[in-house]
Amino acid sequence: MEDVNEYQLWLHTDQSGRGQKTINYYLIALRALLKYLISRDVEVVSPEKVTLSKTPGRQVSFLENDEVERLRQAIPTDSLNGLRDKAIVSVLYATGLRLSEIVGLKRNQVSLVSGEFSVRGKGGKVRPVFLTEVAQDDLATYVESRSDTNPFVFIRHYKNPEHDSRKEPLTGRSIQRALAHYARAAGITKPMSPHKLRHSFATDLLRNGADLRSVQALLGHSSITTTQVYTHITDKSLKEIHSRFHSDEQPSSTLEK
Image 1 (tube, one colour):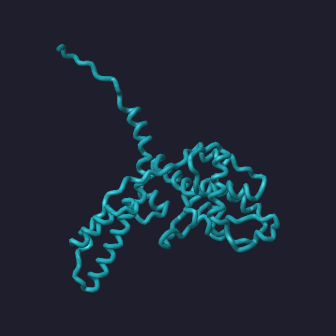
Image 2 (cartoon, rainbow, N blue to C red):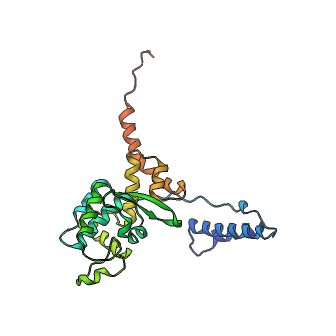
Image 3 (cartoon, rainbow, N blue to C red):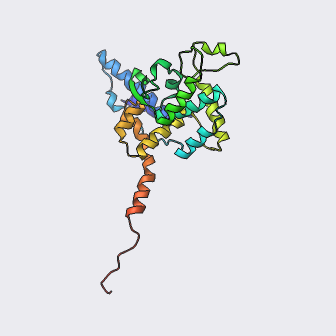
């Protein structure tokens, strides 16, 4: 145990600039090593004695509904690229898909009639995904405007349309650049990314009364702890409830002092 304590002390005092989260990763790896050694009948310290330090709660940044709409309206729809990008924004906000999930989405996965489909997320977990009417319409407009045979839902469109049928999706980096560009055009000063729309999706669900377990399932989180990072967004709702139901008028006393 003395060696473990010295190692933990070294991690905290070493001048390499490791953050608390990184230090915990090192300790988690140490726990895994100890568990392995125990499985090999080696006498070592119990992994439970390697304690992790608390890390500051992570805050998420998201867009309000009106900002998402401003983002959509900032996208010109006089080209396939514009129709595609508008559909991307709408689908990300409607579903909370990860960037890797929307990049890998194929046309035979998505039903434009029912607006429902399944995706395989982290850890190979399959979850249901549902489109809003807006997302369904934007996606249908884009897909039905194409004449290529590319199996992916979102693709790069070339000056020579024949190249559109290459069996490759639009890159994640292209989506990130496009969203940042349209955010500037919409006058949105918050840093923009596909993951911010995932945060916005979860935030909107919780604000409208969805329970945490349902949001966990829709996001594809394996642990409810990961989903709990969004609970801070209910603070606004709590403030509204407080203002609505808590009177600041003090009852007058009937007793003379």
